[in-house]
Length: 141
Image (cartoon, rainbow, N blue to C red; front, side, top):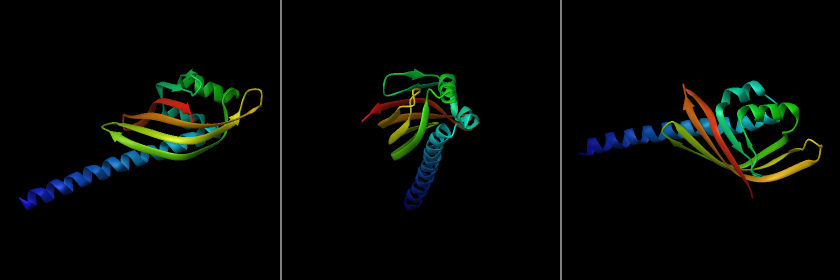
């Protein structure tokens, strides 16, 4: 009986470690994505954003992948700094949900500054061995 419990415990520990590792990978990816948005790394963004993604901004504005990248290119969406104060990632099968808080600063098209504290949820799904952001929603705090 002790051997069976030991095997079950070891197996559960391995599964838990693997889940934590996957969640950590996605948590780091989600933070990198913000850097790509600031530094206009369109190729990197293109790889992580799913074609069906919807960005739901804190003001109710909804963007597709194409709209978000086009708005970054045109300057309609212009982040200068993004400081993440908290982020927590949880794995559910082939999905990771990231909940985070941060301060988002940037410039509006008229060059006026914005500074918004947000609580956000991002959903990543593993598609063909690659993590893709499929949904993002933010709320002002």
